[in-house]
Image (cartoon, rainbow, N blue to C red):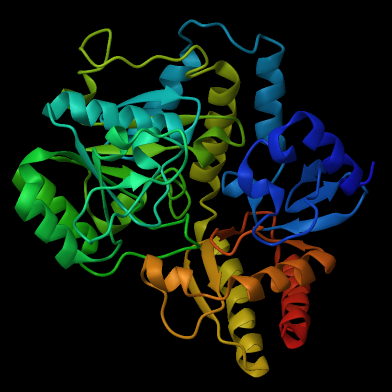
Length: 425
């Protein structure tokens, strides 16, 4: 069927025709592509059109789609049963792999999504400290948890107000929203009210407002102030975990958080999340402790099989240098082409993850992200789509590469990027 026909039918039964808002193409306009299949770095839509994929299911497909070892693990497990509602050896193996790769995660509990991981880590932080206040940062997204769907209040040091209908003001008021990368604002807040803070949650590399890297000293200031005031530091590594190395970004920068949230890559494309940290904190969870958390599909064998296969390939093949080189080759061409065309463009990048902003000057804060030219990005997106490259349908999301983006494909894309940027107004 045609994408447009499918979209019309979907809207009859599914709100806005999609099961997650960004898929509706509202930020860029036009008709969503309904995907029929995917293999390696490619997506094929319902009309048979093929695209080089840089969304990669929003990050988890680091090995590309339908990697044979992951497919074998999942199909083999499906033949033995897809969910038991009981413990499995796979959970033990997966937990051992995660805890060994990320030393700050002395114990881990698996859930079914990054949202669940963040929600559970926050509840655990509150239960462990006996405090209510959570600090988050503008532009960082930690799932659709009520207390985190908030925006900054009228001043830099005010508590949040609901950013969506359906979130009571009383819940939003337990969250303080501060500017990302603003050390002075954070330290002032903690000096004034750090004794009330249960936890500070942050994407150590922000990946939900494009890509914004932490400034020197920012994450260290979070670690220092939380320790000083008895609050917990929570790293949301749902996107960054296993994306830059076999382990967490925390190990790249040498900062040990109290709790870490994971997702995306550790499921190999299956729905999965995890949260973990110090033993004394994790042992507060039920049934041993008083903090309740549960899930029928948590640690289900299909997700565990996919995750074990994915992490095993990453550990064995260590593809990270190659992924970085592939991304850098693309980004060099993008920068050169934009400069030749006289287009204001900033690219933020780390390893195999990047953010493209049509903006003149650095992009280090949420305000600078929002000042970028989203309308130009929308035109850029559609020109790239017509040329066979699938980018995020929003100016405020990340771009990824996978092991399937071979040098030949990168060379093909470089030519496409150059042509599109030369024509972009």
